[in-house]
Image (tube, rainbow, N blue to C red; front, side, top):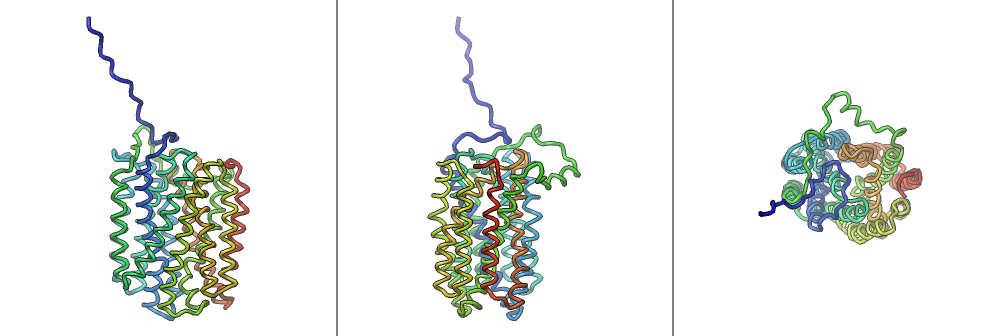
Amino acid sequence: MSQPIIPPMTSPPRSALAEPTATVPRLWVVWISLASIGVWAGFFGPIQVLLAQQAEAINESDKESILALVTGAGAAVSLVFNPLWGAFSDRTILRIGRRVPWVIGGAVTGAGSMLILAPADSVAEMLVGWCLAQASLNAMLAALTATVPDQVPVHERGTVGGWLALAQTVGVIAGSGIAAATGSIAAGYLTTAGLLLVTAIPYCLGSRDIALTREERPPFEAGRFVRSFWVSPRLHPDFAWAWLTRFLVNLGNAIVVLYLLYYLDDAVGLTKDQAESRVFLLTAAYGVITVLTAVGGGIWSDHVGRRKPFVIASGFVIAAALVVLALVPTMTGAWIGAVVLGVGFGIYSSVDFAMISQVLPNAGDRAKDLGVINIANALPQVVAPGIAAVVLGLDLGYATLYGLAAATTVIGSLLVTRIRSVA
């Protein structure tokens, strides 16, 4: 009598809400890093160069106010849409996954927004185009960021965070380089749109995204959905401190980034053409150093199993760079500041992200909660122009402005000590 055939044992598919334990493939890290390059190029090509050039072309005598209005409005859009798209992503139950649909939609719409910005010759057109770009790119950013706690085990998040920090730096350099190399505002936007689409394709084809089942998705209640965007500092104090520290450090960084072109023009004394080319060169120098420190810092943090010492120390290094820019308004000072800033921000970006991923309150709300954290990235873009307008409007100069940015960064670094659940 023949024996019955027993099918081989297979492991059930992992739940989208389960804590990941398996090592992620290296190729997957490459694809998510590539998509991140496109996203950050989409953000920072306009922020660092193209929007400033457009503002100056529209009204040279009022360029600071126009830039402040457009970037501030875009950042306000980001404040709303990053956590909102993240919350929708958390609840998406399509078969291809809950993150990748938002990457696809964000990439396509983001490219479309660049087509609107390319011919823009009025403040109104700039506002519409940049607000749409912020809404679109934040859909991608929310989904890509949440994929890390979805798929990367805790003991590897510093390393993956390092690669994503490297990708962010490459994206910033690419965005600035595109703006400098294409020779015109319109060509810069069109090239950025193409880069955004090309870099997103490999990730969308190999995302390994895990579908959320209908049983795992909670019933929708409008009131509960709205209330979920408030994460109680009393119930989740470590999450609250992580948010505040990131906000303060990014506020210092936003002051520098948004006004770097004008700093080189007005404080260092370069011509318009010189300032535009130096923005790219300084960003490239900063980027090279960031690349050298981001992955290494993340790996080192994973190896020793600690996050806070790295975040605190790197914050002080960032502040030192801002002090150099404040006290030495020359190209020599700018080069030193860029290099020191790269050292600090490389380590900070990778390890702070890993630390934040460990204080998320709920696995079912990863993208939404990371969206709330990302408000700490976007809100400084709203606040920084206001601070700069007051300081520069009172003729206190860039030394005062960048000194204030350094002090803000130091305070943010010190407050990391209040986080208790992460070493």
